[in-house]
Length: 224
Image (cartoon, rainbow, N blue to C red; front, side, top):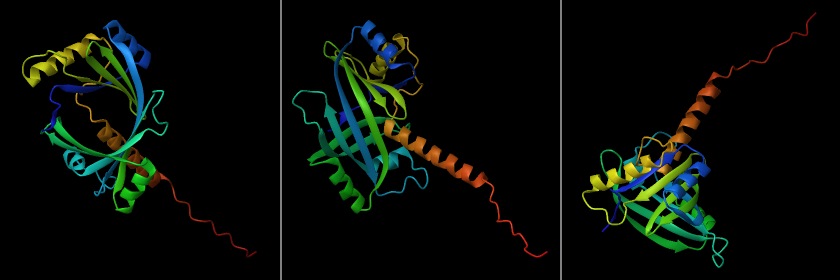
C-alpha cells in the first residue's frame, strides 16, 4: 500500500529565508533539525534530447540519494540509498500516492558509476538543504534547493477530518495565513522543475550559438 500524498502540499516560497523562518516562528513552529540531501536521477530514456512528460519520466526513473544529518555521531559521508518511487499520478500531474523501494549502498560515486555503466542517463541532480520545523507533532519541511530557491512541504495536520480535498484546503489556508509570497502551484515536483530549467537553458544556448556570425577567413593576394 502506498503513502497517500493527496493531502500534502509542496509550494515555492519567494521571500527570503529569514522572513519565512520568522513567519513560521510567529505561527508557533520551532526549528528542529537541519540536513542535506543530494539526489541523482537516472533513466534509460533520453530526456535531454527532447522534453518527456512527468508521468513517463517519473515511471522510468530511479535515484541515488545521499543524506547528511547534523548529528554528533552521524557519518560525515552520510547514508546513500538506491531508491525507486512507484507513483500514482493523476491527469493534472499530481502525485496521489507513492510506494518507495530502497536499499542502502556503499557510496554515491560507486552507485553512480554502476548506473552509468548500465547505460542509464543522469537527467537531474537535486541538491537541497532541509530545515524541519515542529509544533507539537506537526512538522513542516523547508527546502533550500540549489538553482530554484525555497520550498515548503506540509503534510495534513494531526486530527484533520474530511476528504483529501477538505484537508488540502486547510493546508492552503494555513500557508496563505503566513502572509508570505508563494507560487501558484501547491504540488511542485522539484526534480521535474530542475529538469525543465535545464531544457530551457540548453535551448537558449543552442539558439544563441545559431545566431553567432560565422566569418570566413579573408584571403589576401600577394601579387603586386
